[in-house]
Amino acid sequence: MHCPLCLEAAHTRKITELEDGSKEMIHQCQNLDCSATFMTKETFSHVLPNSPITIKPCVKR
Image (cartoon, rainbow, N blue to C red; front, side, top):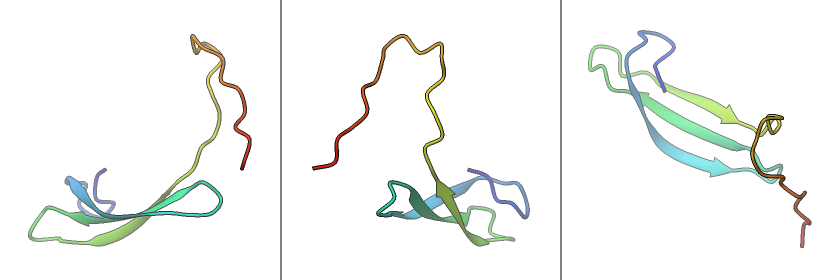
């Protein structure tokens, strides 16, 4: 992940898994002159059609 302000590398500091299956992540820029802290959200979109295996939908228990 890169910092949206200075475009330098950022490290993930915390990952929170949400009930909808997505993840919220807090990142911190490694550029000492910037040191911005920012949040991103990761969600599943879809499986690409050229994937070599077929994935069956998960059943929630």
